[in-house]
Image (cartoon, rainbow, N blue to C red; front, side, top):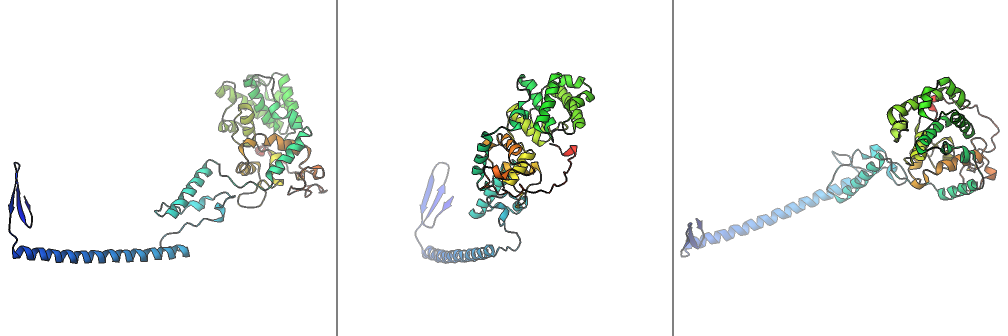
Length: 376
Ligand code: SF4
């Protein structure tokens, strides 16, 4: 049943009966009191709204003051640090205080940092390329075109070049394992002796005693240890890969005597799969001399080829990752040598930050002998 001020309606399933009542003084007063009450209610609602708006304005002004002072009573406010600016690698500590926020400014910061975290995870954080890198690279390419270096004819990629793909891959692996701490000419000779004795084959190596392999690869650096590693690698290739070599970076790195430099080189040459830059001693040294790499967050030289690889990959375009190794190795073998670089004949000595700084030092420093654990 529904009652109204001026009428009384009775609802039933069949029909609705409406009874009209005359307006009385009681009903008029009631209507008048309702009007008064409504006005009063409206007034109080308006006042309430105004009060709410006033409080909101106060809260917002307090918040603005807090943000501008960089202080918040119960929570740290994120402030981007210098390490997050373009050209540097972000530090994980920079992300600790990032929270989801309703304000558009803070949301935008969170999104940018989210991308940075994801990029860090996949090692694809890009930094600003060093000044003049294109001119330096172009100059080195020109110099390399005008002369041949040992790497061009006796490098690892030349190993087993006339063999079928599977045998060639094994030859490349063996050649890479022999190449650490060894000149290209010496490595090439050792690979040839193995080949002439039918030992560029995992089965043949497994069947051959270690002493024979050791004698054949001598005088490559650390030849006794390398003979042992080669036998172990051949055994693994036979047992786990059907006589082929591992086709992934982690599997290659799981072989004894294979480090990151070799693994990246083998992935590139044997499988045509460029997953990183192959940084050997030449690439490491020259990248530092050219001012292409620094220790993270500093202006100091990188201290290991692996550190150089990460720093180079952060800015060098990917299509240069594969050619940069033979380019700089050859340049290091002929012009920018480890000791007494030939800055006088170097075509980029006008823009190289290290020109003539090391070329004329007569004092010979004692050679630091590497251990077999550090070879790569
Ligand atoms: S100027 Fe000297 S240090 Fe610089 S790249 Fe040339 S040879 Fe190397």
